[in-house]
Length: 262
Image (cartoon, rainbow, N blue to C red; front, side):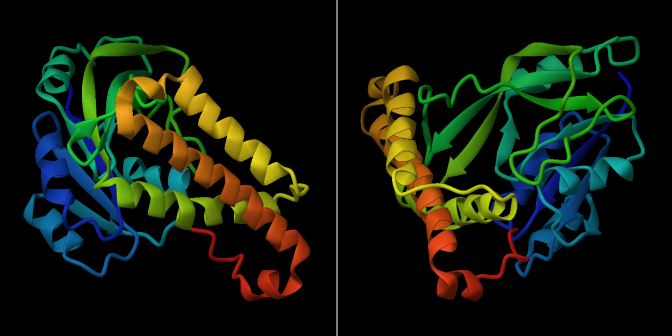
Protein backbone atom coordinates (compact mmCIF):
# COMPACT_ATOMS: atom_id res chain seq x y z
CA UNK A 1 0.00 0.00 0.00
CA UNK A 2 1.33 3.50 -0.81
CA UNK A 3 2.38 5.51 2.25
CA UNK A 4 -0.13 7.81 3.95
CA UNK A 5 0.42 11.14 5.71
CA UNK A 6 -1.63 11.71 8.85
CA UNK A 7 -2.61 15.33 9.55
CA UNK A 8 -4.10 16.93 12.69
CA UNK A 9 -4.84 20.58 13.50
CA UNK A 10 -4.45 21.59 17.14
CA UNK A 11 -4.88 24.30 19.73
CA UNK A 12 -4.17 23.28 23.33
CA UNK A 13 -4.83 19.59 22.74
CA UNK A 14 -2.31 18.14 25.23
CA UNK A 15 -4.99 15.83 26.65
CA UNK A 16 -5.78 14.37 23.22
CA UNK A 17 -2.84 14.60 20.87
CA UNK A 18 -0.85 11.54 22.00
CA UNK A 19 -3.79 9.13 21.61
CA UNK A 20 -4.73 10.70 18.27
CA UNK A 21 -1.22 10.38 16.82
CA UNK A 22 -0.83 6.87 18.19
CA UNK A 23 -4.02 5.99 16.34
CA UNK A 24 -2.80 7.55 13.09
CA UNK A 25 0.62 5.91 13.35
CA UNK A 26 -1.03 2.51 12.90
CA UNK A 27 -1.59 3.30 9.21
CA UNK A 28 0.51 6.42 8.48
CA UNK A 29 4.20 6.68 7.62
CA UNK A 30 4.30 10.45 8.20
CA UNK A 31 2.60 12.57 10.85
CA UNK A 32 1.99 16.33 10.61
CA UNK A 33 0.49 18.56 13.30
CA UNK A 34 -0.58 22.09 12.32
CA UNK A 35 -0.71 24.08 15.56
CA UNK A 36 -2.36 27.48 15.95
CA UNK A 37 -0.50 28.71 19.03
CA UNK A 38 -0.94 26.16 21.81
CA UNK A 39 0.13 27.35 25.26
CA UNK A 40 0.16 23.84 26.75
CA UNK A 41 2.39 20.84 25.93
CA UNK A 42 0.66 19.96 22.64
CA UNK A 43 3.65 20.69 20.39
CA UNK A 44 6.18 18.96 22.64
CA UNK A 45 4.02 15.85 22.90
CA UNK A 46 3.43 15.83 19.14
CA UNK A 47 7.15 16.02 18.39
CA UNK A 48 7.84 13.29 20.93
CA UNK A 49 5.32 11.13 19.07
CA UNK A 50 7.28 11.63 15.85
CA UNK A 51 5.14 14.32 14.25
CA UNK A 52 6.36 17.33 12.30
CA UNK A 53 4.84 20.42 13.92
CA UNK A 54 3.94 23.35 11.67
CA UNK A 55 3.06 26.63 13.45
CA UNK A 56 0.17 28.41 11.75
CA UNK A 57 -2.14 31.12 13.17
CA UNK A 58 -5.71 29.89 12.80
CA UNK A 59 -7.17 30.50 9.34
CA UNK A 60 -10.57 28.91 9.86
CA UNK A 61 -11.43 25.22 9.65
CA UNK A 62 -10.97 24.41 5.96
CA UNK A 63 -7.94 26.60 5.19
CA UNK A 64 -6.22 25.38 8.37
CA UNK A 65 -6.80 21.73 7.48
CA UNK A 66 -5.25 22.29 4.05
CA UNK A 67 -1.94 23.58 5.46
CA UNK A 68 -0.61 20.15 6.46
CA UNK A 69 -1.46 18.32 3.22
CA UNK A 70 0.30 21.05 1.21
CA UNK A 71 3.53 20.08 2.99
CA UNK A 72 2.95 16.33 3.04
CA UNK A 73 5.45 13.95 1.44
CA UNK A 74 2.76 11.51 0.34
CA UNK A 75 -0.18 11.71 -2.03
CA UNK A 76 -2.72 10.11 0.30
CA UNK A 77 -3.74 12.03 3.41
CA UNK A 78 -5.65 10.84 6.47
CA UNK A 79 -7.06 13.79 8.42
CA UNK A 80 -8.31 13.45 11.99
CA UNK A 81 -9.30 16.00 14.60
CA UNK A 82 -7.32 15.77 17.84
CA UNK A 83 -10.29 14.28 19.68
CA UNK A 84 -10.79 11.52 17.10
CA UNK A 85 -9.39 7.97 17.00
CA UNK A 86 -9.32 5.15 14.47
CA UNK A 87 -11.05 1.97 15.62
CA UNK A 88 -9.41 -1.42 15.03
CA UNK A 89 -11.93 -1.99 12.22
CA UNK A 90 -10.96 1.30 10.58
CA UNK A 91 -7.26 0.39 10.74
CA UNK A 92 -7.92 -2.97 9.07
CA UNK A 93 -10.18 -1.43 6.43
CA UNK A 94 -7.55 1.16 5.50
CA UNK A 95 -4.71 -1.37 5.41
CA UNK A 96 -6.71 -3.53 3.02
CA UNK A 97 -7.21 -0.70 0.49
CA UNK A 98 -5.31 -0.76 -2.80
CA UNK A 99 -4.52 2.95 -2.91
CA UNK A 100 -1.97 2.50 -5.70
CA UNK A 101 -4.58 1.50 -8.27
CA UNK A 102 -7.88 2.86 -6.92
CA UNK A 103 -9.84 5.32 -9.02
CA UNK A 104 -11.44 6.78 -5.90
CA UNK A 105 -10.62 10.34 -4.83
CA UNK A 106 -11.32 9.52 -1.21
CA UNK A 107 -12.83 7.23 1.37
CA UNK A 108 -15.42 8.04 4.04
CA UNK A 109 -15.69 6.51 7.48
CA UNK A 110 -18.61 6.51 9.88
CA UNK A 111 -18.09 8.64 12.99
CA UNK A 112 -19.20 7.65 16.48
CA UNK A 113 -19.84 10.81 18.50
CA UNK A 114 -19.52 10.58 22.28
CA UNK A 115 -20.55 12.51 25.37
CA UNK A 116 -18.09 11.34 27.98
CA UNK A 117 -17.84 7.61 27.24
CA UNK A 118 -21.41 7.38 25.92
CA UNK A 119 -21.90 6.81 22.21
CA UNK A 120 -24.95 8.76 20.99
CA UNK A 121 -26.44 6.94 17.99
CA UNK A 122 -29.39 9.25 17.31
CA UNK A 123 -29.91 13.01 16.79
CA UNK A 124 -28.07 12.81 13.47
CA UNK A 125 -24.88 11.89 15.32
CA UNK A 126 -24.50 8.48 13.66
CA UNK A 127 -23.50 7.21 11.17
CA UNK A 128 -22.24 10.74 10.33
CA UNK A 129 -20.05 9.73 7.35
CA UNK A 130 -16.93 11.89 6.91
CA UNK A 131 -14.32 11.81 4.12
CA UNK A 132 -11.05 11.60 6.00
CA UNK A 133 -8.77 9.60 3.69
CA UNK A 134 -8.26 11.34 0.36
CA UNK A 135 -5.93 11.88 -2.58
CA UNK A 136 -4.56 15.39 -2.06
CA UNK A 137 -3.76 15.69 -5.78
CA UNK A 138 -7.47 15.41 -6.58
CA UNK A 139 -9.24 17.07 -3.66
CA UNK A 140 -8.87 18.69 -0.25
CA UNK A 141 -10.93 20.47 2.37
CA UNK A 142 -13.28 23.21 1.21
CA UNK A 143 -12.40 26.82 1.99
CA UNK A 144 -15.27 27.06 4.47
CA UNK A 145 -13.99 28.59 7.71
CA UNK A 146 -16.54 26.69 9.78
CA UNK A 147 -17.35 22.95 9.67
CA UNK A 148 -15.40 22.33 6.46
CA UNK A 149 -15.58 19.00 4.62
CA UNK A 150 -13.82 17.33 1.69
CA UNK A 151 -15.81 17.81 -1.55
CA UNK A 152 -15.44 14.74 -3.75
CA UNK A 153 -17.91 12.75 -5.83
CA UNK A 154 -15.88 9.62 -6.52
CA UNK A 155 -15.83 8.40 -2.92
CA UNK A 156 -16.32 4.98 -1.32
CA UNK A 157 -17.80 4.44 2.13
CA UNK A 158 -15.78 2.08 4.29
CA UNK A 159 -17.59 -0.32 6.60
CA UNK A 160 -15.71 1.02 9.63
CA UNK A 161 -15.88 3.76 12.26
CA UNK A 162 -13.75 6.43 13.82
CA UNK A 163 -14.46 7.57 17.37
CA UNK A 164 -15.07 11.23 18.15
CA UNK A 165 -14.90 12.27 21.80
CA UNK A 166 -16.89 15.40 21.10
CA UNK A 167 -17.76 16.51 24.64
CA UNK A 168 -16.21 15.50 27.95
CA UNK A 169 -19.57 15.73 29.73
CA UNK A 170 -23.03 17.30 29.54
CA UNK A 171 -21.74 20.55 30.97
CA UNK A 172 -19.32 20.93 28.06
CA UNK A 173 -22.11 20.07 25.62
CA UNK A 174 -24.10 23.08 26.82
CA UNK A 175 -21.27 25.52 27.50
CA UNK A 176 -19.87 25.12 23.98
CA UNK A 177 -23.34 25.50 22.43
CA UNK A 178 -24.16 28.61 24.47
CA UNK A 179 -20.67 30.11 24.28
CA UNK A 180 -18.22 30.21 21.42
CA UNK A 181 -20.26 28.11 18.97
CA UNK A 182 -23.25 30.46 18.93
CA UNK A 183 -21.15 33.64 19.17
CA UNK A 184 -18.96 32.61 16.25
CA UNK A 185 -21.98 31.73 14.12
CA UNK A 186 -23.70 35.03 14.96
CA UNK A 187 -20.60 37.01 13.98
CA UNK A 188 -20.30 35.14 10.69
CA UNK A 189 -23.93 35.83 9.84
CA UNK A 190 -23.61 39.51 10.76
CA UNK A 191 -20.49 39.93 8.64
CA UNK A 192 -22.29 38.28 5.71
CA UNK A 193 -25.09 40.82 6.02
CA UNK A 194 -27.76 38.44 7.29
CA UNK A 195 -30.52 40.17 9.27
CA UNK A 196 -33.31 38.67 11.38
CA UNK A 197 -36.43 39.71 13.32
CA UNK A 198 -37.63 39.18 16.89
CA UNK A 199 -39.23 35.82 16.08
CA UNK A 200 -36.11 34.29 14.55
CA UNK A 201 -34.47 33.03 17.77
CA UNK A 202 -37.66 31.27 18.87
CA UNK A 203 -38.40 29.74 15.47
CA UNK A 204 -34.88 28.44 14.89
CA UNK A 205 -34.53 27.19 18.47
CA UNK A 206 -37.81 25.26 18.30
CA UNK A 207 -36.98 23.84 14.86
CA UNK A 208 -33.60 22.62 16.08
CA UNK A 209 -35.14 20.79 19.04
CA UNK A 210 -37.89 19.13 16.99
CA UNK A 211 -35.45 18.08 14.28
CA UNK A 212 -33.02 16.45 16.74
CA UNK A 213 -35.51 14.98 19.18
CA UNK A 214 -38.31 13.86 16.85
CA UNK A 215 -37.14 13.50 13.25
CA UNK A 216 -33.61 12.33 14.15
CA UNK A 217 -35.01 10.10 16.93
CA UNK A 218 -33.30 11.64 19.93
CA UNK A 219 -36.15 10.26 22.05
CA UNK A 220 -34.56 6.81 21.68
CA UNK A 221 -31.40 7.91 23.50
CA UNK A 222 -32.93 8.83 26.84
CA UNK A 223 -31.46 11.78 28.72
CA UNK A 224 -28.57 12.09 26.28
CA UNK A 225 -31.01 12.47 23.39
CA UNK A 226 -32.94 15.15 25.27
CA UNK A 227 -29.66 16.90 26.13
CA UNK A 228 -28.38 16.91 22.56
CA UNK A 229 -31.71 18.25 21.29
CA UNK A 230 -31.80 20.94 23.99
CA UNK A 231 -28.20 21.99 23.33
CA UNK A 232 -28.97 22.28 19.62
CA UNK A 233 -31.99 24.42 20.50
CA UNK A 234 -29.92 26.60 22.83
CA UNK A 235 -27.24 27.03 20.18
CA UNK A 236 -29.78 27.95 17.49
CA UNK A 237 -31.72 30.30 19.79
CA UNK A 238 -28.61 32.14 20.99
CA UNK A 239 -27.08 32.30 17.52
CA UNK A 240 -30.04 34.28 16.24
CA UNK A 241 -30.57 36.19 19.50
CA UNK A 242 -26.96 37.38 19.41
CA UNK A 243 -27.30 38.35 15.75
CA UNK A 244 -30.43 40.32 16.62
CA UNK A 245 -28.52 42.00 19.45
CA UNK A 246 -25.75 43.04 17.05
CA UNK A 247 -28.40 44.59 14.80
CA UNK A 248 -30.23 46.45 17.57
CA UNK A 249 -27.61 47.47 20.11
CA UNK A 250 -24.78 49.65 18.86
CA UNK A 251 -23.04 49.56 22.24
CA UNK A 252 -22.86 45.76 22.18
CA UNK A 253 -21.83 45.75 18.53
CA UNK A 254 -19.07 48.31 19.01
CA UNK A 255 -17.70 46.37 21.99
CA UNK A 256 -17.41 43.18 19.90
CA UNK A 257 -14.23 42.42 17.95
CA UNK A 258 -15.49 41.15 14.59
CA UNK A 259 -11.93 40.59 13.41
CA UNK A 260 -11.65 37.79 15.97
CA UNK A 261 -14.31 35.44 14.72
CA UNK A 262 -12.06 32.42 15.10
